Amino acid sequence: MHWLLEEPLVYGAHLDIACGATPGLTELLCTTGAVRLWCIADLAGPGLHASEVVASHLGVRSVRFMQTVLNRWREALTEPEWALLTDYLAGNKSDIASDPFPELSLAPDLNGLEYNGPILDFGDCEGVGMSTMKGLHPEYDELMGAFFFLIYVTTVAGNSLLVMLFFIERRLQKPMYIIMLSLAFSDIGFCTVALPKAIARYWLEDSAILFHVCIFQGFLIHYFGTLNSLIMMSMSLDRYLAICFPLRYPVLMTNRIMGALTALSWVTAVITPGNTLAYTSLMPFCGPNRIIHCYCDTL
Image 1 (cartoon, one colour):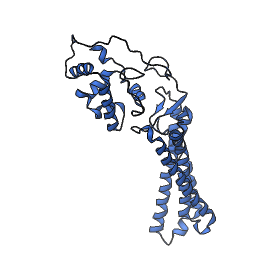
Image 2 (cartoon, helix red, strand yellow):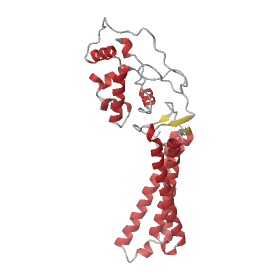
Image 3 (spheres, helix red, strand yellow):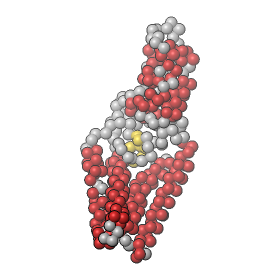
């Protein structure tokens, strides 16, 4: 029984089911240390049906994806092996005379292994790879790339049109439209930071990104997110003055004041993400060097 419980689940072993239908599975198992059958068996319980528990342990949000993985593991086990595992999960942990011990030893395929040393000893932090979204089948990569491309083109074109109208039409050069102009630049920046790499990941299968570039991308994403919040705060202040003090509004809120508030938003938005970037860049990172996402957000 001991040999079955110690069966590896990764790198070409008998129970390695990592394929297109289970993207990022190997990295998840290695990261959480659940690389042996007993790890999953103890979590999944009798019949290997507790997909919610296994998903929570591995950090997987999709219970359906985890159920698919458990089903594939059940299918990979032979009938004698499944009988042994069923007895183990039922509480019978004693040796069985009819135990179908394998006559041949397993030879996992370790060619192209990214990691140095033992399976759970990762030390290469030079680069990071991005995997697909959890549960997304590879045959939908082109469709997802086209979807992201459409969003990016629409966002850039629409906001660029707003910027052009602001500078062409003098009647739009008012405090409220200064806010809209700032939001347009912020939206263009956010989409340009996040979407091109995601599009390249799905269309060109370009999933590699330098480690420090990944950290910087996460910083910019949080920067533009913070900036949008500060700009919306300025918009709230502008609308408050316009509604509560309509007669004094032209004096209280001028283009110069709104320009100063907008500039202050762009400058102060860097404080929180900047501190995070400074501390993150000093931390040692050792792991599977793969992000189960289509862009770098939080490492």
